[in-house]
Amino acid sequence: MSYICPLCNGLVVPEQACPHCLQGLSECGKLNDYTGPYSPYATSITSSTSDEEGSSCIHLMYCHHCQTGTLQPVAMWDMSGNL
Ligand SMILES: [Zn+2]
Ligand SMILES: [Zn+2]
Image (cartoon, rainbow, N blue to C red; front, side, top):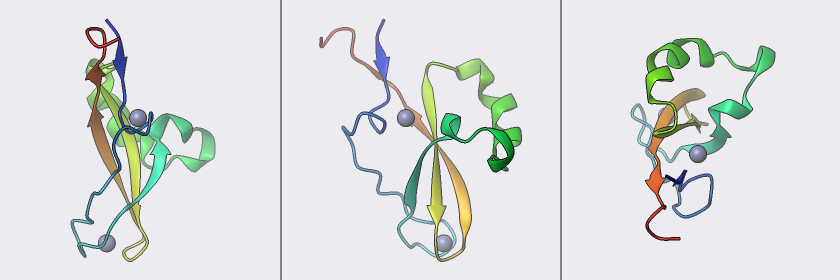
């Protein structure tokens, strides 16, 4: 079983729109990259997604208009049959 995140691997370009202002969101990397004091979003999501670890990759999207961070779960791709 070989799962990869298409966003981490540059296979897809994130084109999410902000739910508040519909401006394009900036992709700010994996949630896992945000550890320590700079992770205000981590607490609420980690508990709910712990069961799905390995099936989705949580990315942090940021809207510069609203200055709001949005967590975007990215479905992992099963590459075991393609490699
Ligand atoms: Zn990812
Ligand atoms: Zn916005």
